[in-house]
Image 1: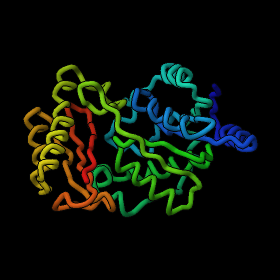
Image 2 (image 1 turned 60 degrees about the vertical axis):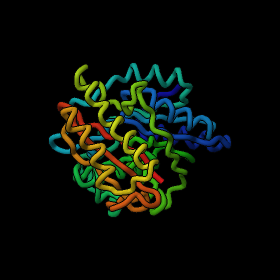
Image 3 (image 1 turned 90 degrees about the horizontal axis):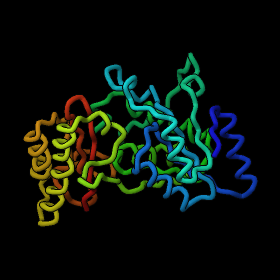
Image 4 (image 1 turned 45 degrees about the horizontal axis):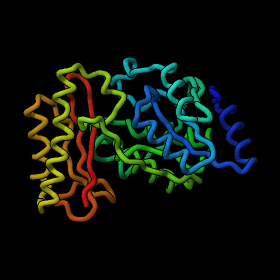
Amino acid sequence: MMILRTTAEMRRQSRAWHRADETVGFVPTMGYLHAGHMSLVREAAERCDRVVVSIFVNPTQFGPNEDLAAYPRDFARDEALCREAGVDAVFYPAVGEMYAADHSTWVVEESLTRTLCGASRPGHFRGVTTVVAKLFHAVEPEVAVFGRKDAQQALVIERMARDLDFAVEIVVAPLVREPDGLAMSSRNKYLDADQRQRALAISRGLALAVRKYERGERDAAALCATVADGIRAAGGEIDYVELVSRADLCPAARAEGPVLLAVAARFGATRLIDNVFLG
C-alpha cells in the first residue's frame, strides 16, 4: 500500500493505473476510521480495480466554535485498517498541500444546502464541496463512495458532480450501525458511557417513526415528534428533527413520495446525525 502526500504524486499514480486500463475507486474520509468506512472501501473494491482512501481533516468545513482541534486523529491505526482491507493507496495530504495560504476560490451548491446541516452549520457545505472537488481532481476516480449517514452531504456531492460534469459515479452506500443501533461515527469516541447509552434515543426514535409510517402515519409533525420526544426524554439537545423531500431537501408537510427523516442532536458536547429514508 502506498502513502501519497501530494496532489502531484496522487494524480501521477492514478494516471498510471488508468494507462494500465485499471479503474480507480475512491473513499474520501477525515480519518479515525471505523467499520462504516471499511464498508465503503469494500463497496469501492467491488466496483473498481484499485481503491484510494483519502485521510484529511478538512478545516474549511468546521465552524469557528466547532471541534476541528479536538477531532480524533490516529493515522497509524487508520493505516493499519487500510492495509488490512487491501487499499492500494492512502492519500494523506497536509493542509498546506490542499489550500494555498491565499486560497480564495470556493465551490458552492446553492439549493440542497439551504436546510438541515446547511442551515445549522453556515459555511459547512461550502467547505465540503470545495475539498471534495479538489480531491476528485487529485485522485481522478471513476467511482467515489459516500455513506448514507451523511445523507445531505451525499446528495449535495451527487448534485455537484452532475452540475460540474465530473466524470465520476457517486455511489451512496448503506448506513452502518453499532449492534445496539447507534449510527457509526468517528465522533462517537467523544461520548462517555452515560451519553453513549442515552444517545440510543436517536436511532430508537427513528425506528419507531418507521414503524408508524409503515402503519400509515404520514403527518410530518407526528413523525418528527416521535423522534424528538424520545431525544428530549433522554436529555439530548435537538439541533433539528425534520422531514424533507428527497428531491430537493425542502420541508415536507406529509410523508408522501420519497422523503428523508433527518436528525441532528447533541448529547453532552457531541453532535450526532442520523436519518432514515421513507417511501
